[in-house]
Image (cartoon, rainbow, N blue to C red; front, side, top):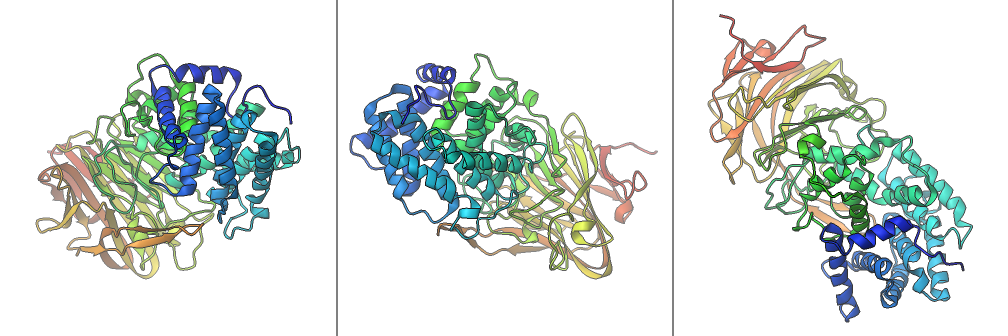
Length: 629
């Protein structure tokens, strides 16, 4: 078999030279190489595959470290070790196509980068194994139950990404891989076409990052080895890093909260749809920063890395992805000070295709305030929750509204209004009957309004949710939220207003007001909810059940229970007019004039009201108080 003088997956001669230069200069690349060397040295000196992870994951992590060191140093002992680990990975019995596809990416890296150090027999063996893997993980050939053969699911991205990378690595030695490669390239183009205009997946941030983990290596390799841009129709991918950065807050999180994310003190973000609240790391982080707009990707990478452990831009490589992180950092490093976060990421960012909006007051620290709103305008398939019109609130280190977490699909965990215990009627299916953004406004300080028309979701004549957030501090507090829900059906219904929050918050009824209070015991911050309509509501704190999830491949994970507040009214229609303030300590006094949707609430120098006639049904407003006297 012919040998290429240099690797070709993800690398060119110029990139390899730059990587080698950065590997010896102080910075994130050198930090990653040092971590890889520690991992490899422990193994070569007789140590085991890295502990703390299951054998298959540990093998992939070790193999990636071996590949990185070999491509830098051409040490035959390291190349042989990469061959040995590759052979061990090749024979492991994996039941799920997702795992098989990920294995194919790691084996392709080893084959492309290290095969010159292997004997012909090993090259042939691993090459044939990659050919088999490239064909097997495609849904039409798979023996794995549940692998959907459609472009509207993260499985599609992961399996065709793995198949394509495997086929690309071996196509010169195994021409029959060419057809698999062409199919994979087209199918990843089809998947990327489904992303939102800001690069976000309709399955949620978490599943979107997982899909990127699977298909990103093929997008990168196609660009480098083939000169082919798979994002030409789905260009939103290049904006994904900015959107993820817009969500992140450097919060202190001492424990797992609401069943999402991992314990740690490096940051959090509003979460949706079985989505962990932790910042991206490993390979997804590398791919996010690599695909970002070249004009700002260095600045975005520095911003995203601030949420990772470690002193050197988070370049610890503790998860699989050490080689991709090294390659990514090597490509984007610049000899300049990064721009401030506020000059790279806007305070208000909306993916209009998905109906996903972020409103934040700045990029200062753990006390940043963020409101996320999700209209669910586009959802063609994949994982689905009843969360149209949902909102998330983070501020002053409190998660005042978050999703229930993994495997908690019920709408009570999404902070939405329920009609007879559901959002979508029994038997209602997604696809073509989603939400719409009906009004959008933003201010330079991050304040804004986002109104949503949800009648197709609820399948009733009127279902409108109007949300506003104010960061002006006219009310004397960092964050004020106004919320109006207008619901109307032809039949009598039970309407339930819900709010799900992080588990480390304390809840208490608020006798002095028509509402309740949440408190962050760590710093004394509070979030006070009050209702101008309906009056005399009864609020119930509900303790949800722990959940578990059976993943493909046999893995089972257990998740903590979540809590939520609910209040109910009955009738053909319901008008909820609620407002919240987030502050340190005691909430400010609120003065209400009028009743129902005609109420006007004054807090300090701020006034909250619902403006009928401004447009059809009218938006909720938070403005500086103007005396009529």
